[in-house]
Structures are given as structure tokens and as C-alpha cells.
Length: 102
Image (cartoon, rainbow, N blue to C red):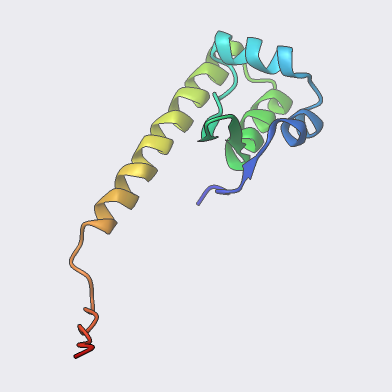
């Protein structure tokens, strides 16, 4: 399973050694995963995705190979959300007993 920790921009910049503008340019080019919205004014990146893309850069993958990797990472994000939502709709294993305060 991929690391589900979320890193904010300063951590991502330090981890991969490039600045904000370059990160967003790579996102636009499809060679870096887009951030996950954490709130109205906050975003972050799954650390496992950052690690996977960094490993691809180190291994010398081509831009096209990295685009494919980023695409597969984004598919995994959607699959992860789908599996979590599906598990939430399963029947609970126990029910709380209603307490009367009469």
C-alpha cells in the first residue's frame, strides 16, 4: 500500500528540490500529480505519489513514461476513495442502544 501521508508545499519543495512555480509547471505538463484539496485554502500531496514520481525521475524515465505513471497514480486516488466510500455503506457490525431519560 502506498504511503497515505499528505505533505504541504514547503515539504514537497524540500523533498524534490524544486520551487512552487516549477512544481505547478510540471503539473500542467502532466509529469507531476496535482495536489489534493485539504480545505478552502489548503492543498497537499500524497507522499507516496511524490516518492513514486521522484523514483521515476531518478530512474531516468521519459516524460511520457512519467505522464503514464502520474495518470495511474490519479486512478489509484479515485479507486482508493471509491473503496473507502464502499466500506462506509456496509452494514454496521453493532448498533448503539437507545437510552431513555424518562
